[in-house]
Length: 156
Image 1 (tube, one colour):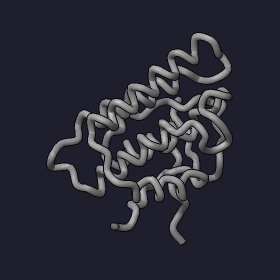
Image 2 (spheres, rainbow, N blue to C red):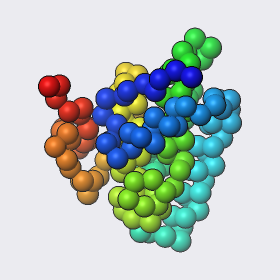
Image 3 (spheres, rainbow, N blue to C red):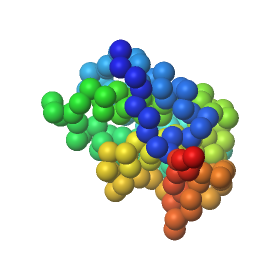
Image 4 (cartoon, rainbow, N blue to C red):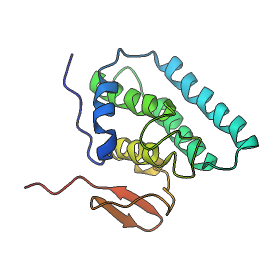
């Protein structure tokens, strides 16, 4: 098994899980896309009865991942497939970071930062999602307009 790809901008609290997710067996792309769609449907169902989480952000992340998956083809390297799959798997896991994605207004913030980092890594800045102003800022976060981009720490 190859070493996990180090993607700049992955939130510090997600680094270990993201590396582990890259080591999983590859899932066929149609099944991966179906898992994103299933989670988007779960978000929509939950949003009908629960206004205490950011359903719009969850939906936007899912839409960006579906677009990214649509660009994967037979020429996509295995390492890229592993990174993209890890981003999808992180998104569909509800209990990462500080709690469930569906339990607070900031539940999807870590997913958004991670997925945005992957999108930027593959040159798809056009698919990045805006992270709300309620998202915590740390010393590696740069505010640019309405988006927050987590930057890697400076090299020493």
